[in-house]
Image 1 (cartoon, rainbow, N blue to C red):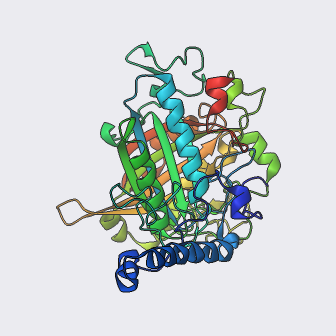
Image 2: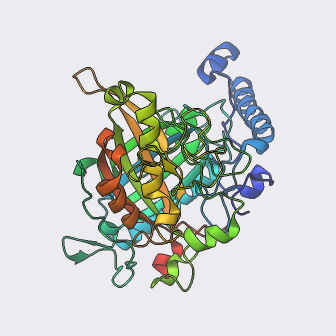
Length: 440
């Protein structure tokens, strides 16, 4: 499939700038120059050393790369990584040209970083001592770590305070709605929405943070970070080769997630098709929902095992439905128990199961998070929910409404942020992210 691990060389996948400079350098440049002397021979050897290390690192890391170019953006069906850093941006630029230039710069930088290469022509080490480095340098010596970067557009990029922005009149997709307030929500506006979204996922947390940090640096003066969230431990699988992970409640999460190998379901539920949108520029893209869901960890931890399993509808150990079988056995919601159905009607699985929503499914890519404590000795921890679908009006909204009204597990949950973003399709070499929106 598109955007799976790259089988091309760094030179073939690059954006044409800095693809072999400084990515794997492990030498302290200042120490090298001082020990060799400041003459021409020392400087030449120092530069050669950086490039040699970079090239060695690039070749060794090819198997650790996710392809940047393709029909769809990376970070959707890409085999879910273990770490995430997601950030939303507000655009300060006033002209269409400035916004396009930012997207072009981001496209080149993302292509470089997904190779494990530094940003720019000279990276973190080989530029002028009298100018800031082009790359921040914390990923020196690290591989690409299967970095994927996904970029999307919020509703406010198109229109804000009743006024159209950046000449995008008539380009707002009908499905890019303002998400409704759901029962139990405690939404913090400063943690929600945004003009742009960037999701960086990797197997190394420093690689994911490096990606967001450098894109934020490149956006300086054009866009600033509105909010960001770091996550650890994926809470879903996106490929048959992965096992089902566990969330912070200790239960397996994402058992019935859409997988990369399920092409028919991806077309049906995830990718925006030509007949499923009023905006041709979005064909091949998707919609991304983000929700920061705080879990009341301490209350949950005092609940009995039986209560926990009834709330979820599955066994905590194997993940099997309470109606029997193994993790992937189809649940029998009609099976009788001693006091009603053996899978309670208000259990999480019964309320959100596709069979209760006309077969609607979403591709989930959420992560656990822990952001310290709240000052009262309680963990500020939970799930940073991320899901992709081709229409939130038929997929996310009805399911979330049912969950907030009928799911007994919501007693232990509070959603503190909410966001919806249109994810444009992937790019070909020579294009920039979102190009069809501006030039279509």
